[in-house]
Length: 417
Ligand SMILES: [Zn+2]
Image (tube, rainbow, N blue to C red):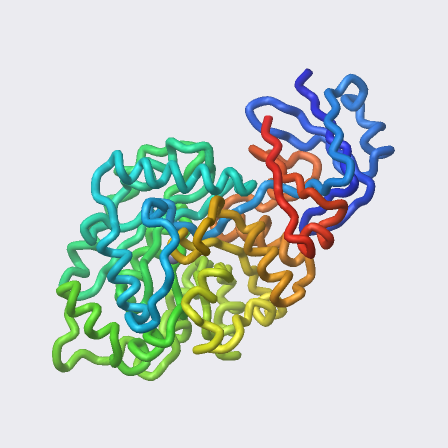
């Protein structure tokens, strides 16, 4: 009775599409794929006889999904329209003031966000554990451990003079304070190049190597960031001053004329890192990301929420893919998503990109599965419908092919053991 067979109109993963299709699963605490392919091929597996059967005619089976960038501890804020008059730094300031501080309220917000991920077929998340009172904190990481998601909890930190050394001391203690086991990995997120010094990034990379921690960062997100890094001008000067961080006279531009990606180039080369947003990239930036084996994370609806394409041009995710940079999909926080959002799923990002750009369906599926796994430090082979893959869930699209499901913006159901 611990064998389940699902018959469907088709199956799809990042490598192939098969129609008609069957999937044979060992069902214990999780699914293990025993066979997947044409029904006749699955018939030949010794455990096919006597398997419990589930008929999903007219549907398409795809792997469980990876949401490579989320801020589940901001779920309590809910969707919020962006006010261009306040700008990007005004928005960040608003988020900072909305942050919770108590263990139980943070746990509630993370639990709500996790439910919204699970409802969207997400099995693994790259979640950002936000700073609490400006300091790195494991509160949201422990909250993620209490949910049914697996993945990596990236502890966020801000490290800028004059508080740089104190914060980095706290960051260096995180691995010894993390008691999580198994389903949730600890990771680090230096927040962004305008709030973390090169020394702070260097520490994250050294700790990543020494403690086997995935590292990610926000990078090349806004016009304001590019201006601050290149010339130490603009609203981020005021923003850092508001945080009580050094921006006084004599401060040099952090990147001295360079782009945010070029500014981080030496750090990126130390160890592959996940870099989130990349809303503005030059050809030279893309070459740096490719040579450093970085993984990109793109949050399409969040980028458009900030009006990025109007200010910075279309996102270059397809140029990144052409340059062999894996591009994963994230939802970012619920704040950037439309009113009425009920789930936090890369499936909705795939539908959005298919409608906007007509991107190849299997490329979109790779972005929401194997590339996402790589971005958050999980084994990509578990996010494909291939023998031996282990997963908490499979997704069922209510259309007879992946392309038809994307075109129709089809709904998604989740099958769990
Ligand atoms: Zn983020």
